[in-house]
Length: 240
Length: 219
Image 1: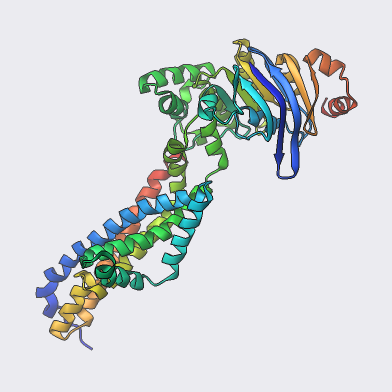
Image 2: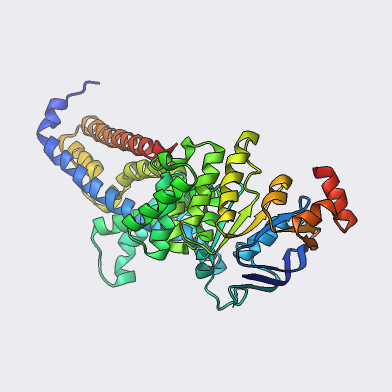
């Protein structure tokens, strides 16, 4: 479970997050949507401390990760992240991308890590690419590898920061399909996305952020058909 | 002017022996300078401000004064600094290592900072600690940016090593000069020395291209 309480983040004098509180339960898929600059990505990046919150608390499995004594690295091992621009390690093969952190951080043997890595590549439909370098892959393939890389650490939570925004339209589906099947396995997921159809279909809850505030927090059926605030109505009108 | 290389032919082995001396200085100084340069560059990109300042001052001093001055301070100053006279070769290695560390640290810093920030974020998000992240993820990629400039630095080092002749190290340069003085023919031995340096530099350039090509595998 991820519990967020009164989360604030400022960059200099710019207040990006203005006190966000919410809870993401185990097995829940949460879509985070909102206009550009609303703080969606910053919110997500606070959850694995790629951004340090200015104030507020975040508990992951009852551990307060904003506490200075918390081992951030241990927290991150358990929270996978997928980036908009993939950030695969270009000097490592696809399989090495998947085995590096489990071997280095978790101390797995090469054999063990490779077995798990190949199994994950199978799962995202890229087993044949195991020994290719990332630059030989299409955008959609790269993102599927990136998802597999995060999963290789066997995290309890997965964060997705606009995973399909940098993809050509015809590659969006293959990535969303992988995420959909991941959601069906019961993975707890927080997804910053502009894919409204996906959010509506897969998410259990939609968080609508605007201007650094959590404006709406509702199941997709309710949010998409009956948004409460004018801001959300306005946003949805432009998106759909 | 007539060139007569036959007259210095008997002295050829004497001059060629200088290659070992020059290589010894260049290799040792290169390796030590490279390691020191990495450390300094890590200081420069460190979040601990005071380390960055120390590294910047270091670089500024060693880039801002003549190499031959640094060499002489270390060699002729050693009795006052350490209480005993150090060997010329030791002084040469020390001066070149310290000097090239300053240049190399700048090359590495720029190379590291040119690596996409997303790479360190991806590593951090996987729970990879700073040291392995630097060693396994950032530096290997930075090497691609660093290598051409680094090769340049090693080439400069090889050529500039000739100034160790001023503190009496028996390198290629000094040996050529000694033969010249001995035979009253300077052009031939000096041209020969030039040829040796040139071949060394060409070899380095070739090696650099080879390594560069190998690193481009993943492109």
